[in-house]
Amino acid sequence: MVTPLSYVLYDEVEMKKAHPCFHRCKRFQILRLGADVKILCLGCGAILLMDRDHFNHAIKKVIAHHDHPLTDAPQK
Ligand SMILES: [Zn+2]
Image (cartoon, rainbow, N blue to C red):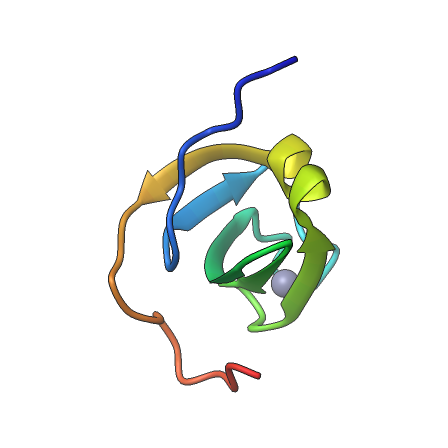
């Protein structure tokens, strides 16, 4: 059992796999933390929803801490 990385809401994280969008971006921001985790692709602005276990496996590292959303993208 791997110890999950420690991260908090609005952290900027790097994922192991790039988002398959035009930007091939690996940087995401956490928009919601719960049983499900909602992350925002900082390349294209797409929002992805995944369960916590999946996220813990997919995250590579925390890049930076933020205390607010980085974009004006819809937060729903
Ligand atoms: Zn993207």
